[in-house]
Amino acid sequence: MFGLGVQEIMLILLIAVFFFGGEKLPEMARGLGKGVRELKRAMEEPSEDDKHQERAPMERHGSTNNVVK
Image 1 (cartoon, rainbow, N blue to C red):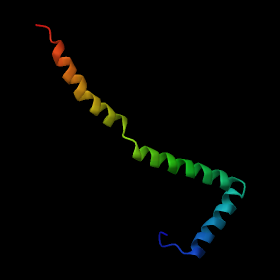
Image 2 (cartoon, rainbow, N blue to C red):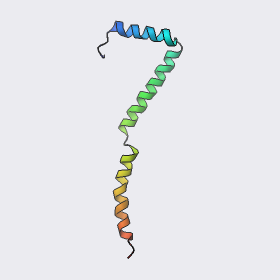
Image 3 (cartoon, rainbow, N blue to C red):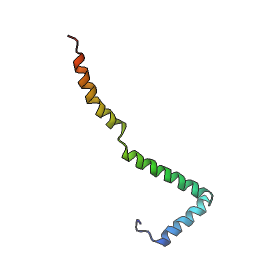
Image 4 (spheres, rainbow, N blue to C red):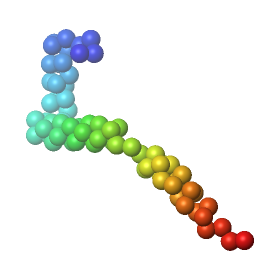
């Protein structure tokens, strides 16, 4: 996992507990999990620009019949 061994991970967790306290860490992990979930969801869904580009050709095609001479 990123070239980190068990000892390095334990040291990082120990430092995190020292800085943030034991009560704050689960809250931070929950927020991080929600952020990762939202990122995955956003990557799977097409963007608003893509949705607009799909609709645009249909709108242009429909408007050619309404030309006033």
